[in-house]
Image (cartoon, rainbow, N blue to C red; front, top):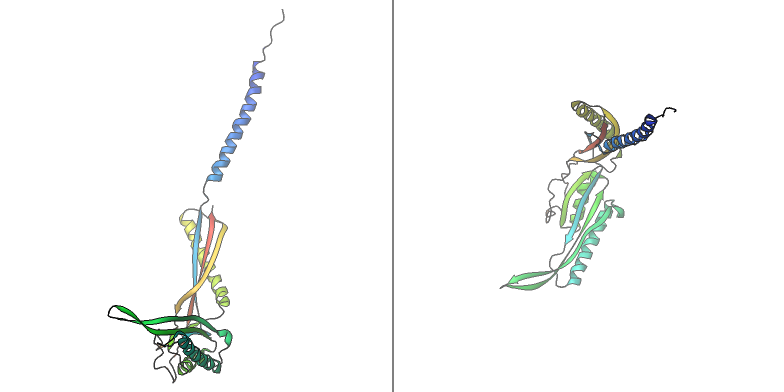
Amino acid sequence: MAPIQRSYPRILLTIALPTAVVLGAFYIAGKYVETRDRPQLSVTGIGEAKLSAEPDLAQITLGVQTGRQPTAPEAMDTLRQSMSAILAALREQGIEEKDVQTSNLSLYPASDWIDGEQVPRGYEASQNVTVTVRDIAKTGDTISAATAAGSNYVSGAQFTVEDVSALRSQGRTEAIARAREEAKNLAAELGMRLGDLAGFSEDISPYNMTSYAKGIGGYGGAEGMGGGDMDMPAGQQEYTVRVYLTYRLR
């Protein structure tokens, strides 16, 4: 009788190979999920650069408050005549139409309280315009001309720089270098190194505004300003360029 041959090892091997492949696939998938779900560490460095420039624009707000008038049409007519005179005075100072913008126009009833009752007392009207003065040396003359023409409201003159793109470009280079150095130091403190750049943003904002003229206030601030030279120092306009750089860590 011929001996019986047994094939168990081959069967075991056939079963073991697919099992190993499946288990290996689960292991790899598990490692992928673990890596994918692991948060990517990053640091953000902030850099600032402060710059200053001489202002080349002045903005002032001028206006008229009519006081009480018997009727609404009379209040609006008084306002119209006063504003026409003011706008004519501005044109004589070389102010162009594009540099005059209405910022407020209102008409409202006036009244008094007498013996606990509200008694109508006519109407009041007001209008304000924001004026851009491109020759800042004429800012004081412009205000004086407007008040002489009938403006009884003047709000503070603000001096600024019209085009800040050159300042932004100049400050950006310095701010980026400081932001990168800060991010590098943060990474070193964490025992890591900077990887790829993951984010960038910047902003520019006034840092210190030397912008208000002596003697100019809010409501009623135009009284006594009808003529004469005015003290209008423009000062320096300071800007801060701020940069944010975010790096992945490795």
